[in-house]
Structure formats: C-alpha cells, structure tokens
Amino acid sequence: MSTFHRSKKHQTKPDRKGLHPRNLHKQGYDLPSLVKSYAPLAPHLTTNAHGNLSIAFADPLAVKALNAALLKRYYNINDWDIPDGALCPPIPGRADYIHHIAELPGLGDSATNLANTEPKITLLDIGTGANGIYPLLACQIYGWHCVGSDINTQSLENVASIIANNPTLKGRFTLRTQHDKNRIFDGIIQAGEFFDVSVCNPPFHASQDEALKANQLKLINLAHNRGEQKPMSKSPTLNFGGLEAELWCKGGERLFLKKLIKESQMFSTQCRWFTSLVSKTENVKPAKKMIRKLGAIDIREIEMKHGNKITRILAWTFI
Image (cartoon, rainbow, N blue to C red; front, side, top):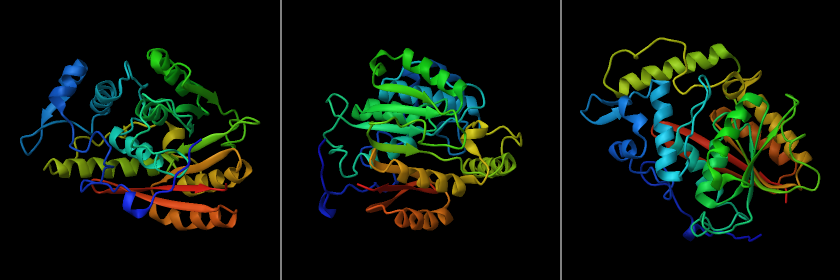
C-alpha cells in the first residue's frame, strides 16, 4: 500500500462552483448529450424560468432518470434503478466525496490512480442504501474494491441487481447485511480484515416529521430558483426519495455520529481512515471532540460547497 503526504503547494482546491477539480460535473449537465446516452430522460426535460433546458428537480422520477443518465454516460453503469421511496442521491456531490477522500494520506495519488490501474484500495460503505452510489463511483473512477453494508435487505437486493447488470463490477463490489440495528461496524468488519477507508452518509433527521419539513423547505427553495412563487407540490413525497433508515433515526445525525465514532475505536487497527458526511454544522465540534478523546492521531475536516449548500467530510485515523 502506497503512502503519500501532500504539501499545501500540491493540494487541489475546489473550483469557483465548489466542485472538486476532477469532478466531471463542474460545468453542469449537458442534457442533450445525456438524452443520447439515456433516452428515458427525454420526457423529463423542461425549460426553466431563464429559458434554459432543465428538469423538474422536485420530481423524484425526473431526478432518478437524471441519475441513471449520468451514471451511464460518465461512469459506464448500466440499468441503474432504485425502488420507489428510496434515496436518490445527487451524483455530483457524491462524486465529490470520493474525490476528496482519494487524497487522504495512504490512499494513493488520485490524480494518477485511475480505474484502469490495479490499486489495492478497499472501501467500506456504511449504509449503502438501495442506490449503492459510493461504491459504484469508487469502483468506476478509481478502480477501488468496495463493500457495501446495510440493515435493509431489500435495499441490498436492489444493489445486487445493479451489480449483476454490470459485469465490470463483479468481484469488486460486494454486499453485507447488518443484522443488528444497534451496531455499525461490528458484524460487518470481519476478523483479520483491513479497509483503507470507510464512508458514511448518516441519517440526518431525528424523525419522519422533521424530514418532511426539511423537504418542504427544499421544494420552496427549488421554486424560488425557478422564479416561481410557490413550490410545485405540497405533497409529503420527498423529492430525492429516502427510506426511513436512510433519512432519519432516533437521535438524528448527532447520535448516529456518536455511535459511529465510538465503534470506530473498536476497529481502529482494521481501517486506516474513518470518514463521514456531517450535514449539520453544530454536530462538527462535538464529533471532533469525541474523536480526539478516543485517541485519533489525525482528524481532518473537509468542506464541500455545492450551490448554496455546505456539507463537511469528517475524517479520522488511529494508525
């Protein structure tokens, strides 16, 4: 396993739009090109208030079609699909997560470590969901070997079908079921096993009601960006989908992070870098304090800005 240390001079910085320099979506969506790659996207095309070609981002079916088109056009993933109600993640933001963690010490130089090489980098995705997006991107961008875990067997069955439809993923993306809802790494990381990095997108709401209210605010913001006075719909349907375990859990993001960090110490010698998205700013400081208290030797906070939204990747290592 190669190791490296980046000086400030060699660090890559996000461009003015906020996306990582290696992100393929820095210039926005080339919708005509995407339709050529994925015809089912065509019915979802519309014209926004500025006269530009767009899609209805408040429509879960339109967002799902866009994701399928992006994955096929840029990442050679065929027949990507998710069940109704499953979380439909924005591809540019998820790709950014992978690009940023690829620059962590010990993971190799991501500028040259492309999918046509044979890197011995292994990634564990905690809560891969029905979309399996992080392993899919990590496999196709950098050629990493990935394990996706989840407590929902139906979600894993859906990801298994995606893997089956893409022979290039065979042997590089495997799945494991978490049978204990109170455990995260325990029961997933096996004896004698080692991962280079773990990733996680925690449930960030404490209840379904909180998740629905947040979604309604998102709809209002989308309407405002289109120049409309009202959101397209007041339906409780989440515009980016999201099964219960994907969007909310008792205690919300803060409690989930606490469990994640606590268990990471138990497997401190079996994973080089533990990482997690942190959506709520107020959760960063207590999380870093806990990580420090548990003895991590390196803690990093990586800010990602996508439009008006700012999220952070928290990364820590004990070795």
